[in-house]
Each structure stands twice: as structure tokens, then as C-alpha cells.
Length: 129
Image (cartoon, rainbow, N blue to C red; front, side, top):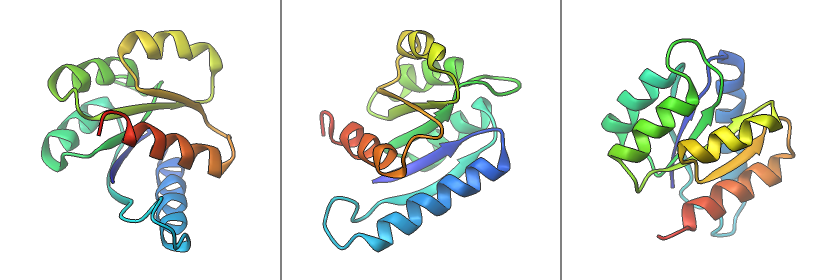
């Protein structure tokens, strides 16, 4: 399971990368076996470039970013690569309607428990695979 992290805040990108990498290594069962963070992006344009370059299975996408935001980046990604799963990760629950309209496969709030985020990633990845 190849994951791309897109967030405009460097600390959040690094925290998510560390969380996913550590969790995948610490779980001996097959649930997270093979989970790999293949890259990070600081905005929607970079996310689109990295999806094209790295072909991730799942993109963790922030909603609000300068330049091309997560909603528009999701629309573009889903139109070009419909097989790529996009999980909107945001601070604001009111973004859920716009996220669904943009085509996200799942929605999660920042600050949720790590296990909940990881379950969302795995569940979303397994949809239609």
C-alpha cells in the first residue's frame, strides 16, 4: 500500500510520515504489511505531479492549502487516476460536504486517534481492490 501525504504544513507531513512508517513496522500482522509512505507534497499542484510520478494507492490530502487546494487537487486526481484513493484530512468537519463533492473516497479529521486514521487508510485502500 503506497501512500502519498499532501499538507502545506511541514510538521504535519513529517508527523504523518513518522506515524504511518512507525505503525506499519510495529504491527506484525498483515493489516499494515507493505504500507509505505512514498512521498510528500506541500500543495495540490505538487500532489498531482507526485501522483503522476509515483502512482500511489492512497493520497492523504489536506483541504486548505495555498495555491491549488485539496478540493481541486482531488477533482483532478480522481478525473485522471480514478483508481487512486483520496482521503481528505482536515481540521474542519464542515469541509466534509465539499470533500465528498470533490470525489474523496474517505474523510477524516486531523487530531483523530492514530488507530482511526490507520483503519480509514486500510479500509479505503481495500475498496474495489
